[in-house]
Length: 144
Ligand code: HEC
Image (cartoon, rainbow, N blue to C red):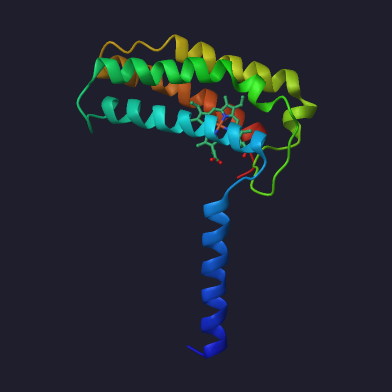
């Protein structure tokens, strides 16, 4: 590899690393990404139990459900400010189609509230609906 090419590769790696470490600076964007991050964690915990990757744990399952129910009730407030950040992935349509966005947050709240967490099987049965609610909103309102 030529020296100049090596430098370019190193530069790209460093720039990528810095961008990743910093993430969003805007406090609103940061907060809503963190809220979404808790959803990711809850879905992983539930998915691991449903898939038998970890043993069923009633308290952990309840906690994950609560994170989805309470968190989805907070989506509207978390996105109310049309804040922007270079690291933000929310599409402008969030605010131009606000009522639909809020309705999709409500769909997640309904699906999460209906999740039966009394066994790994019942979690597995309800996860499709929850994942569908995440996906419906991301497809419309989250840039990839
Ligand atoms: C009502 C709309 C909506 C629903 C429902 C929704 N999301 Fe999101 N999600 C978004 C938007 C918009 C973003 C981009 C936020 C940003 O970067 O400002 C996002 C971003 C994310 C991110 C990336 C966060 C980051 O650090 O950049 C994860 C992970 C995520 N969502 C997981 C989930 C999961 C899991 C669910 C379902 C349990 C879910 N979301 C439901 C709208 C939604």
